[in-house]
Image (cartoon, rainbow, N blue to C red; front, side, top):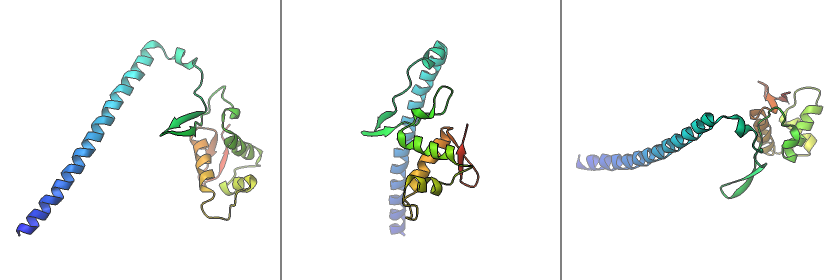
Length: 148
């Protein structure tokens, strides 16, 4: 019986350590949200118009020490030429298609080995990102069309 009690106590000690760590993470994130809320409030108090006139963010940024492309959200005055070259090619293929396109069809035009399992996943990710940013529209069957 004492062995069971000791084993359960050890389990509970481990659980307590995990919960303490998670609680610390939650507190850090909550503090970050408080700062973000203050920034947003300050921006809204100062008038949002002056921030719209600032130059757009560069197309490339550093995340975790690596260079990554920023895909802008489609908005008035922002054309497909604001996208990186590979995204512009995807947009051109979708625009020239007679209707909705499948990822495999776009991959074929791009010269990707579409018959190799997993080779289309990066392309699917790019097309989903374009859909998330309003450049493409994803249909229920998984095909994509130009959103404008």
